[in-house]
Each structure stands twice: as structure tokens, then as C-alpha cells.
Length: 640
View 1 (cartoon, helix red, strand yellow):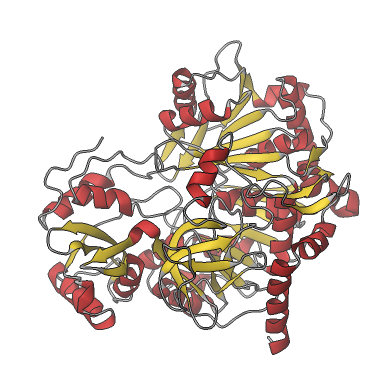
View 2 (cartoon, one colour):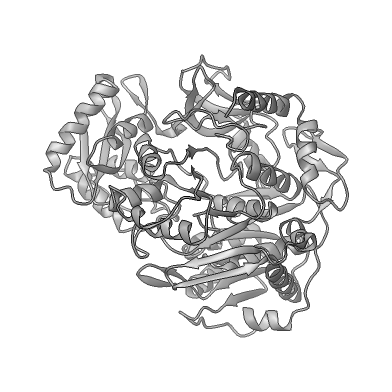
């Protein structure tokens, strides 16, 4: 792209900070308003900023009905692709409008009104999107809890959000098993102090759930009897949803998203960040239980009039490491957004991308990665094999969309490995020290964002203004604290090195575990890795590496360990004191693919720990303890 498009980005970014009213006021023209706003940015109650106060709209209308009214009802809105049930189904915008209006009517028949909360405990099926949009249609506040979450975790969310109704399905489907949702849901309701007045259950053919007389309602029957519901006007500042993110205290934090700023920001990102046009097929390979699913399976693509893909499967094993390529070819997908862990899994199973050769990806334009740091090795592998831009961008549950990225629709900046490129318009990103002062370019510090945050971000936490202030605003007054550490280079590129608590202090040297992981991942035999800091009497902390090897590697483990130790010495230096590493079969992760480094560290340091609710497979933790014991750590490991 030309220099002028780089200038355009620079001008956009500068204007978004100097004239937020003008910048976001223009972006808001792409949304249909029932009543226009009185004020774009309302700072009358700072640091609780509000966007588009006085404005009235309906998010569901903007995501569904208006495309039908514009004559695009026959266009596909959702493609449901489920290799685990061998199903492919297309739902047009007109069909989606009908399904959402009817399900909204079914919710209304259960007493759900504007402002009521509804918990959704659902798998990756189109009904999950229908239920989310139906809540938005009524002005009810949905809170999606990842399907299959443990009863205790679901109960804490029921108590916090106090839902009038819960919507669930009879089961989720994993590659090798059916996960029954209803027994877990029943157990959660039993544990919870707050009781929902009704539960609507979508019965899947793979498992029929037992319904509780007088409380539970069959989805199909409820919809058959329902009067279709109209779109209910809501204030721009009314909540659209609550999404819980794990809190350090064990009490989950309910991140709120408003209706107005959220619709404006997400619609704006589709063209400017992702370079997608209405009518195109866009695929975010995530889950509706996570923020990526909310923003880019449901609301972003539908607000923009795209076709969104709901994929019920895994990057490997459903049936093989070529399933992503099959989906891209079959549905003519131009843009894919997924987590780096998905690509590491594909790369581990099929290191030479042999399966890719079976598919035609000529229409595929860009791969976006987020959710954790994208190690350069995975980025290179994806670039070399896909021959399209591979864009790492960085954001959080709290922010709802990218803080830092490469705005493909405005200007493609040269990619620097290990960097999430430049701050997006609306984001004033600064690296601060403990005294709240900016550090020199290139120095590591706390990554913070000068307030106000742009539209679409969290205005506060659900019923917890003080906790919002304490969690995000108090350590660096005037700034939002991201909880990530990193630096900005001389070209303005942002590097996220680690969560602030993943910076380890080795004999007074602040070192990033992410920087070491990058070096380990570059070894030819390593498919995936993690580095944690373990307690050391002499140096405070020392790094310890875990290595998962590529399929087919048969070399002695001690040789590989010796080589990675030498690599870190060469690339980071003896100061890192990287001398300990162990080969493991697999790493403990959350269901969204984040490695549970904190839990591994507690095991190593003999601290009591709770098995995290978000863990994908608890059986991995004893394996990690055993590996650590072979190095002399985790002597008294015990799970709480």
C-alpha cells in the first residue's frame, strides 16, 4: 500500500484522540438509531465515561432486521459447520429474523423483559446466536457461560447476575464424547442462592435432557407457541451483555458491554481492521462463550452484513489437521480469526502442511491471530504456508475489540515478529513505570491506556463500580491498566511480552517469560512451549521451560533440552539463567487455549492451588507435577 494510506492511518489515530466526538460521531452514522445521541462522549461522571448518551437503538435490529429491510434477506447470515455431527446448514438473514423474533417471544412468555438478565449455557450451535440476539431484541441482558463449565462456576455467575431465565442445550459434543449439560446446570441451580424462574432447553438428537416439571421448558414447544416479538428500543448506555472473566479473588468479574458504543465500534472494526465487506464470509474460529465469539462470531459480522461461520469442531482431530482448510475452501472464506494455539496444534500434527495441498485457498486473504502472544515461529509457519498476511492483534475481554493491531482496511504495516503492530484509533497506549511516568521507548513497563477508553469497551463491572475502579484504574490514575507488560519501539509498534505477573525477577533483572518462549519455539523439534518463573533461594526466581515436541520427533530429550538451553544463552544471554527444561506430552490450558502458567508455577513452588474452572483437561496437572518432580520441584504438590 502507498505511503498515503500510512498517513491516513496516522491522521485517523491522531484525530480519534484529539477529536473523539467527531471521529466516533462519524462512525456512528453507520448504525441505525431510533433517536440520535445528545452527546458522543459523556465525561460528566469520569472515570465512568459513557458513549452516545441520549441515543436510542436496538442492537438486534442493526444486526438482523435492517439487512432484511435493505433487500438482503436471502443472503446467508449463518453457516453452521459441525464436523462432530457431520452437519452443514445455512440460515439466511430472513430466516434468522424469524427465528430470533420467535425465540424472543418465547423468552417474553417466560416473563423476560427489558433489563432482565438471561444466562445462556450453550454449545457452538446456531441456537446460541439466536438466543443472544433474542435477548438483545427484548433489551434483556445476556450472560453467556461457556457450555460445560463446572456447576460451581456457573452457580457463582447465577448468584452475581440473578437471571430471570436460563437457556441451555441438552449437550455439547467433543470429538470423542457427548458432554451432558443438563445435570451440570441442575447442580448449579441447586447450589445457587438465586433461582431462575424458568429454564429453556434445546434438545439435541445426541442426548435428551430430563426436564424439571414446572420450571423447565422445551425450546421447540416454546417457540411453536410464541408470538414473534418486535425490537425493543434501549438507551445506548443500557447494557447489552455481561461476560464474566476470571478474577484474582476467585469471584468472577462481570464485564459489561453497552448497546450504543459496542455497535458503533464493532461495525467500524469490520471494515477498518479486518478489511471485510458486507456479503463476504467471515470466520472467527472461537466459541460464543468467549469475548471473541461475542464480538466476531455474533455481533461484528452481523452488524456489518457479513455471513458468519459457526464451527463446532477442533483444529485437529475432527477429523484431521486439515479441517480448517476444508472449511475455508468449502465456504469461500476470505478472512479467518483464531487463536495461535489452534495453529500450533495444526503445525504440531502436520509440520509440513501436507494436508493444505489438498485444498484450494486461492480466495483466502488474511489470517488474524489473538488471545495470547503469537510466537514468531507459528507466524512464520502460517505465512510460509498460506501466503497471506498473518496479523497478530491484541485485546482483552474487557476491551471487546483490538487495542493494538494492523489495520488491514486502512494500511498494512510491515509485520514485525513478536509485535501486535500499532495502537488502533481510539487507543492512547503508553508504557508506564511504578511512578505513573512514561518509560523510554524500548523499555519494558506496564502497558496502560490513557482514559477515556474508546466506545465498545467496558464502562464498568456488573454491580461493582468500586471493583472496576480498583481492578483497572487505581494503580495508574488517569489510565486503564491492561495487566500486560511490554514495550513500544521507535516505530511505535507495541510488544506484549507477558501478563504483568509473568515478568520474572532473576537476581534483580526483569525478564519476560514470553521472550524466552519465543526462543524455545524457534527450535526445530519444538511444537509448543511455556516458561514459568520458579522460586530460587539465591536469585529470587529462575526460569523453567516446558517443551512439547513435534509429531515424529524421536531424538533423546536431554539432547533437545541441552540445545534449547544453549539457544536462550545465545539469544537472551546468561543473565536469563535459563538452565532447566523438561519435555512433556501436553500443556494445561483453558478452553480458549491460554496456557495456565500461574497454576504450573504454584505446583512447582509447592503452593496450594485450585484447579482453574476454565481448564480444558484437569488430568494434565498431575503430569506436570510429575515432570517437575523429575527436576526436583513440586515436592509436596496437592490440588485444592
